[in-house]
Image (cartoon, rainbow, N blue to C red; front, side):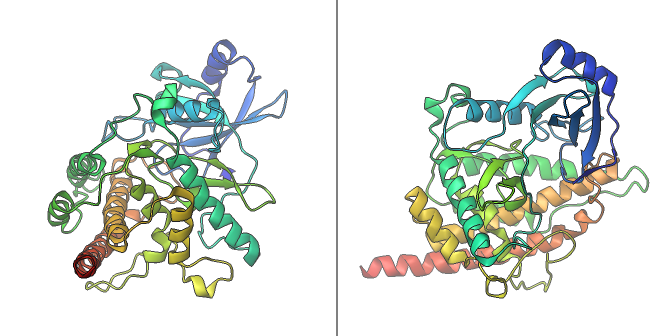
Length: 379
């Protein structure tokens, strides 16, 4: 998955830095850039003397739209805390963090290269049905293990985030990011990126109707293509892309992982997010894929938390809005000439579809909440 370099890096400067700060990484190095990594350019480094391989993650070049995005320093912090704690969460080892922009133009860190399988399609093509089911269950139970981590017992995570009010903080943060991205102008045409449809209306709903507050170490973008599976066995050996990790509501991660089941939701606008690299699936059409209900039950068994249907749909709705803002952000980076991924073009056009799906989940969540309240009143 690594190939030509789209964002050049100064290998001589990097090698000089490593010779002083991480001498166990033997230089000289060769470099390739991974095709994934929408937010932060990601490179495969190979040591010429030893053949050992490493992964470098750095912030994009130039002035950034948001101070809350591209936090490679945060990725390094959580990975270091998890990999040195001796727990069950499969986190790659990290070797160094450089915050001196004079070395490569922006902050970066280097971590272990995991020799495994990464799937950009959550239906896990090319995998036998039995293995496919086991891999999805491993993804679910690995998430439950992460949510079971006690930040108070981990020195590197004690000041990682606040234990309460996650979704309230998210609403405030996403509102700020959405406004900045919407106002971004294309460097070539001068046209604004534009707002997420019905954004203020949806933020009002999320502000006034929220699930019961919970607290856990969350990944922030937990999904199949951010997991590394063993080369031949059906289990997770590593979790990647931790820049959005914090102390937050575990529903956020669960909804993000289960998003592929919701991508075919009918909406009043008649739009679909099923195009390009946005993958969805019908479980019955792919042997071994669990149903959405089975996946939720696996999480409930592993975590001890039985998620209400109205809560799950609320989390789906918030996830769709969040993904709409992510798509908007990719579009903004394209407009500014800062896109990290070779696949970035066209993502901005998917914003209306994600917003429409968010609104449909809001409607469904409210319908389920009314049913649950009526059922509770009868008991």
